[in-house]
Image (cartoon, rainbow, N blue to C red; front, side, top):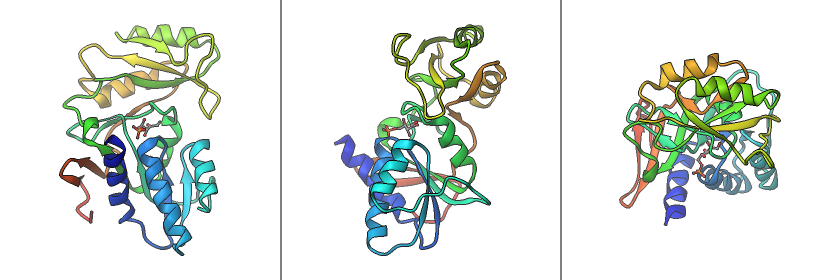
Length: 228
Ligand code: 5RP
């Protein structure tokens, strides 16, 4: 069922793709449906190029015959990605899939950033689940201590024996914010000030459109009125 909803959201986003576009390709199970659909369109003759947000997505896109771009001059026409949480202001938590840094770079480079989710991802306040933060592995415990001073608890993703390593060679600390993230913008700035932090999973004021798939089908909300 969840897969059906994810597929429905991704299919709706595919309606936004036009010939000649440079398309940001997200990471995760929902974004995967989008990339697979795009691959089918390319096989049918559509001419687009993709900017992948992870090695996994790059490999998937290449296997589907989608031409890949990793150096960018100018802007991406359309970026489509999933999210772990979406709040009423369309701010996001991303990074459970570990690709948050490249995902943020791609979203920030896009003329239009479209988020595809099933309705379980919609929250009243961010922080229901963990907030992933990518940090440098070197002296990461000190970085973790500095983050803890912000009033959060945290774990090293994967554990100390087998830490999860990102495509950028970094590790991820998953933060639990007691009471949720009250001011995503301010909290993101505080986290970014911490020495050792590479990037965090709060995406504030970046989303143009969210396509939410529920039992009644996909619907779009956001600041861009263009279809879907
Ligand atoms: C990866 C992400 C994903 O977009 C996010 O975790 C959602 O994934 P899924 O669609 O599998 O639920 O941020 O870093």
